Image (cartoon, rainbow, N blue to C red; front, side):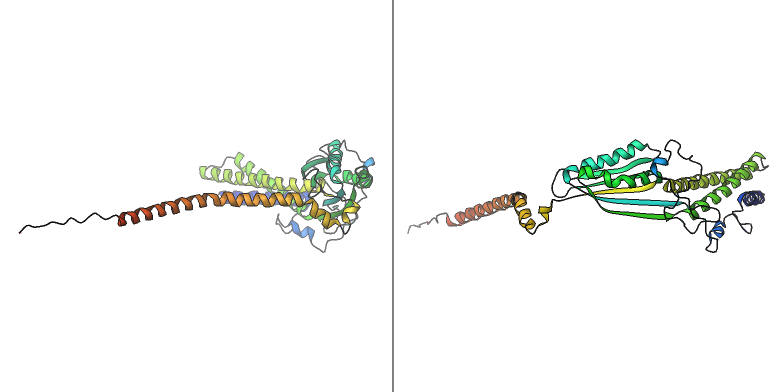
Amino acid sequence: MVRTMTGIALALALGACSDEGGAASGGDGYEIMGMLNEDARPASPAPPMAVMNEASFDTPAPVDSRIVQPDPNGGGGGAPQGTAPMMAYTYGWNFSVPTENMPGLQGAHKKLCEDAGPANCYITNSSLDAIGKAEGASGYLSMRATEAWVRGFEQGVGEGVKPFGASIYSNTRGAEELTAQIVDFEARLKSMVAHRDALQKMLEDKPGRLSDLLEIQQALAESQGNIDSSQSVLAALRLRVSMSVLTFSYQPEYAAVSNSIWRPITDAFGDFGPAFARTVAGIIKVVAALLPVVIVAGLGLWLALGLFRWRGKRKAIKPPVSKTTTGV
C-alpha cells in the first residue's frame, strides 16, 4: 500500500514541476539537462556593467533571489533561452612594492574593502612575511567582492599604488559559467519540495497500518535531508556568482643599483655574517651531538683499561711455594 501511495506522491510532484516551469520533459522530473543542450538558441548579450560611482551599495540583493552576474565581455553560451548567464569571476593582482611600504599598501587595500561593507566586500585571508627585511619579504590578501566594487577598484588601482612607490607587476582574470548547475539544482529542488509536500499530505491522511506510517516518516526525513543538502549547494553556487574572488600578492621592489652586475658581490658581503653564524651554529650542534658519545666511550675505555691492568697485576703476583724437609 505504501508503495502505491509513494508512487502517487511522486506523480503529483513531477506534475507540479511540469506545470510550473516545464523543467522536465517526458514525465521525468530530473531531465533538466535537456534544457541546456548545445542545440539551444544562444542567449541574448548581458547588459553592460555600471561603474562603481553609479552603483548602489545600500540595497544588496535578497538571499533567495536569483543573482545574475553580467559577463564584462558580453555573451556567454550554455544558458537556456531567456536566462542571462550566471558567471563566477576570479581576479588576481601582483604588486611590486618597496619592502618598507608593503604593510601600508596592504592596509590601504583592506580599508577599501572594509569601508564598502560586508554586503559588497569582505576579507577572507591576509598575511605578511619577513616584514621590514630587504630579502624574502612577501604579502598576500584575498577577499570576496561584488562586480560593482571590482569595477571601481580597477579604475583606481593604478593611481592608488603610486603613493606607496609601488607598481602593478601583473594581473589576471578568470571566469566560470554556473548557469547550468544553478538551473539544474533549482529544478531538482522544486521537485524535491513537491515530493516532500506530497509525503506530508499522505502523513496527514493517517494511513491505517503502523508500518505504512513509519515508512512514510522515513521517506519524509530522507526527502527533507536531500532538500537541505541541495539548498546548501545552491547557496554556495549563488555566492560564487554574487561575490567574485580577488587575490592580491605583494613582492619586494629592489632599487636599480641592486640589479647591477655587482649585486652578487654585495649580496655575498651582506650574507657573510649570517653564513658565519650558521656555520658556527652547525659546529656547536655537531659537538653537542657527539659529546655524550665521546664521554660514554671514554668512560668505557677507561674501565676496560683498568680491568685489564688489574688482571695483569693479579697474574704477576704469585704466592710463594712452601718447601718441606724430612729428617733421616
